[in-house]
Image (tube, helix red, strand yellow):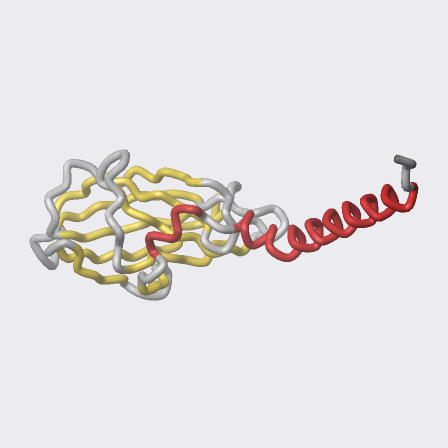
Length: 169
């Protein structure tokens, strides 16, 4: 059989079209895929609550929770925040995990410290201080705080605790 130089050209053209289509698809869907947090699917139906502007309240598995976040000064690394949590749940430990909501920048554990009982109730009071990491290209970003009672104990929360952080701008 004689070689068909036209057949090689057609094959090259098909490969070129597939490669161009792949690059276009990656350009369209790649950023959304790269910025998505695989752990955020569990909170897809959760109601958002802005911790800096509201005291977030919810009931989960028969226990009541209250969370609030305040700016607590500015350090060289950025704004320092104080997270306060009240609950009637009896927990041996509590961990807040900071995750990027508007852009995924990793996960940052924030250990909560038991601070006794709340003055206005019999609820346990937990507190933590932290500085949210910031993106160098956009110093303002939205963060989400997920609560954990152990290493793998991540109950699906009915609220999504978020706040807009400011870095060195």
